[in-house]
Image (cartoon, rainbow, N blue to C red; front, side, top):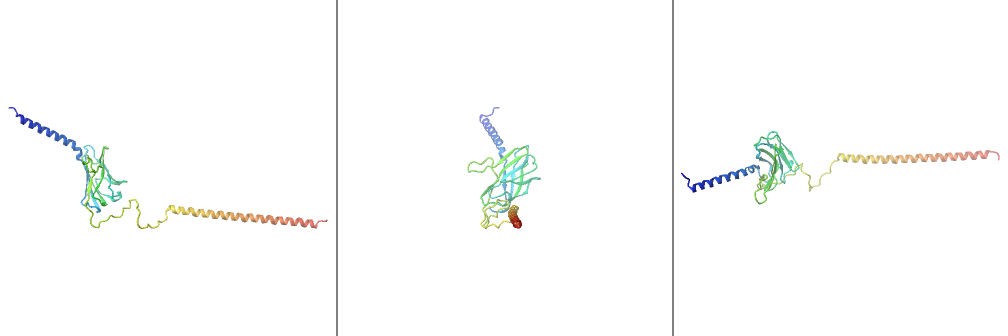
Length: 250
């Protein structure tokens, strides 16, 4: 029994569509993994906020060993503390953010951890550029930011913030921040070791100068004494010669 031409054409179209869909999914599979951040207290100027991060595994043969995060403006490395992380993982501050890592996770296991931030900045959204490193040396970079055009292929984790609560204000900078100019004059700093050393040098110099002046004075007195002695001796000798001359017969 022969198959109707229309039926055969329908099956070919369906088969072609299935192949195309499979190919599309296969090509899109590597991009399915991503990095995310979320928080139950995502509000501008909120304090002591816990942020949860997830980096989805995209390697079938290696596990995560380290995540490096670049902090957004308004959050200093010293304002971040580690709340939860995979067993053995530690947080280390960097110049522009932090790293969290340790013993390699099993292949296919997502890296999940939580940090506490001292205060969120006054912004509508904040991005946490993330660089993932695997045990085989593979590196995945989720650092792209939206620019109003097409969606980035490797987007950085972005946290959208609600408007700040009424009356909320920025807290004072953390001690790790670089010093900034203050409206109030700063108190006079206490003496440091270098100040003490400098003061000691000045004292030694003054003492040396005084000792030199004393030496010069003593030398002057000594020379004066010698001159007087010579003059006295000369006068005595002249007197003695004159007396002998007077007493001798003419």
